[in-house]
Image 1 (spheres, rainbow, N blue to C red):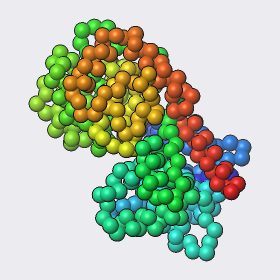
Image 2 (cartoon, one colour; image 1 turned 135 degrees about the vertical axis):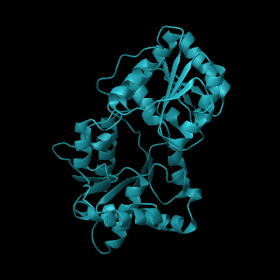
Image 3 (spheres, one colour; image 1 turned 90 degrees about the vertical axis):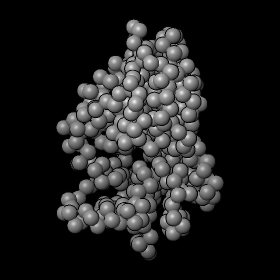
Length: 361
């Protein structure tokens, strides 16, 4: 089985490997993006997309097309030879999925590979798209073999919105090897609360409002977004961390008593990567209960709070600090869950299983 993994420009096989080897990638990354290469075996050949060189004019054309269409077709077109030579194509977000479907529509009369096409934000943002885009996307999606999403809520939404389309929830995962031992909060009077992420659904105002309830605690935000900086302004015990490399990132996890993932209502499991990283480093978690994240880690593994409730968040922070043994046990259960199901190998294997089924049919 020949698998072609088509990812966004900058995530191609050679580009990603070079960045990974140089240490420029922040986070718990692997040699190939998202761990799809774990699917490779004696009878499964995995090839990643290529980031072809482009001059300023070519870049302008590519980005202009992406701005108009909402997806990157030029990047797909540059990879068309290897893509069309595959038995099955895997994509990671709607930008690649819709781009590949456009190519398939143009290949009229030619046999094309099966497509396991993933979306992340498309369904959440559907109502905000102009009518002409929604009509275009529906036309393209009728050519899709399987739509995969990362959230059980998005899966239900997709099945309702696109009843003709097969939609499956595939649990995302990161590397699980080398996890730090589970622990509770550190001993000492000073509580350090860490929150990370750049996703549009991070609820920084609620996180900072909780800091006002706990003036003796240190609240730290690792985010490059303007929303985080604006929310932190005026809160004396909230600091924005300027993290430049993994040494600083990993040190932030180690120093934290707990990791908080504050979320606004969403349907795509926002925050799940940070939850997995916190689990990897053995740090207790407090998370807003929304977006379908409970499908990944249940309430025995994570202390959940209602979204938008600063007082509940502050109370949860006090509870974690007051009962370190209970916090440690939650982390241990989270780590067991990650070892068994929420890892990059399981994620890749789920794609292999779907692909074999499609090819056999």
